[in-house]
Each structure stands twice: as structure tokens, then as C-alpha cells.
Length: 232
Figure 1 (cartoon, rainbow, N blue to C red):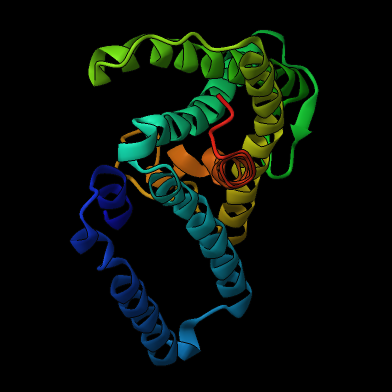
Figure 2 (cartoon, one colour):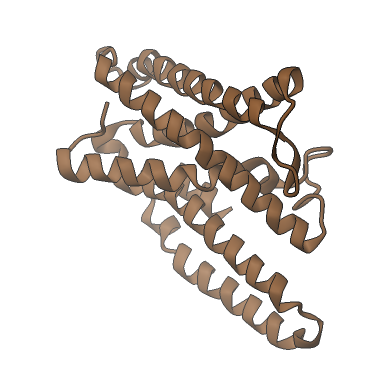
């Protein structure tokens, strides 16, 4: 919930709650670990803390876009970068699923995720590129209508950078998915939650985003700090 507030609000009063909320949450889990010491499997606990670190870094990167690209200077570019991360991940997932169902024969990681195939993994590259480009083209047409600014077409080098980002993001998305699956195998659970009937919890839908968002955030930070602009 705090992350969603950060993504949709500019008020400093909202951001001021982040640190105390994180501290209280950490304190709560610490007290819980002390109280339930005899019932804790520390191997699983280490895996849980490892997953927590990855999740925090992944979702903090989404928050970082809002602070790195303030609306008054960059318009809705921060929102675009968030949508790009999701497009890279979910586009890759969608194409990997359908390509795997159609042509999948060779298992990618049979122990961790038996349904993933090499053919699906290859198809994911096309999905990541396609969805990433689609989001950027849609943004280039819709942003002027929202902001009232003149239309500016993306340059050729922008498309080239987007394709490179998408190609790198695809294996990062698979790594996040497999990492989350490995934790579930260790803890002997099928899903991280039941909020979505038949699809697990929220983390089950966002696990492929976990390594993509830090990568895109670091690249964007480099461009803004070195070039003074987003790479578009």
C-alpha cells in the first residue's frame, strides 16, 4: 500500500510515512522471530530474508522513478518508465507462455519450474520487445493530449535503446520468476497468496518484475545524472 501511495502521490506528507512504516514492520518481524524461536526453520528464514531484500529493491526502484523524474520537470516520464518495466516483464511472460505451449519441448529449469521451456524463453524476447515498443509508441501519442505539449516522435536511437533494454530485461524477468519459484519450493508452498483465484498472490504476478525495475532504474539514473535527460 505504501508503494502504491508513493506512485500516485506527490505530497511530501505521504513520503514521510515510508521510513517509520518500514521501521515498525521490521520491528514487528523481529519480535515475531524472538517469540516463535522454537518453531522457526532458519534455512527457510534466510530464504525469506533474501526474497524480502529482492522484493524491497524491486519495488523501491518503482518509487525511485517518481523521485528521479519529478512531474513538474519530466511530465509523465516517470509513469512511462514504470509502465515500461511492467511491459518488459508481462510481455515476456505472455509470449513465453504461448510459445511454450505451442513449441516447448526442452525444459529450461525442470526442478525449479517444470513448465518453463527453452522455446518459451526465446519467445519471451519477442514479447518483451513488442510490448516495450507498444507502450512507448502509445505514450508518444497520448502524452501530448494529456499535457498539452506538442507531439514529439521518438528518434531512431530511442527505439534502438528500447530494444536493447527489452532484450536484457527478458532474462532478468525469468531470473526473478525462477528465484521466487525456488523460494516456494524450499518452503513447500504453491503460491504466495490466494488474492487472485487461480493465479496466486500479488507477488506471484510481480515476481518477474523484481530484477527488471532496478536495471531500468539504474540505466535511467545514469542517463539523467550524466546527460541531464531521459534517454528518449
